[in-house]
Length: 82
Image 1 (cartoon, rainbow, N blue to C red):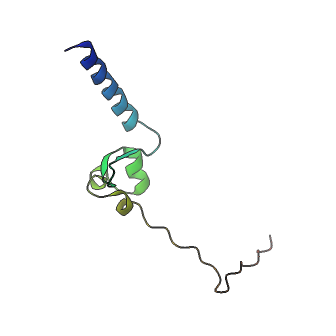
Image 2 (cartoon, one colour):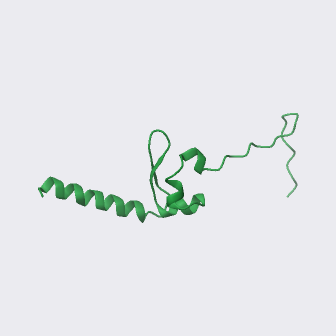
């Protein structure tokens, strides 16, 4: 194995360890939104397993946001007294 191949292998190992041990959720996502790789923290945040996440696309894994509720008139509600 040449020096360049050894360096590449070392870099890939370091990247994989950093990804798997990151204290934040880190996904690798393809251009079409398919998860290529996820770390345990992301799975815990989204409430899925890593295996489940790898079978779906990003928008399907993230729960949709609920729209803000506004009064029918479009005006803001008065502030509650403290």
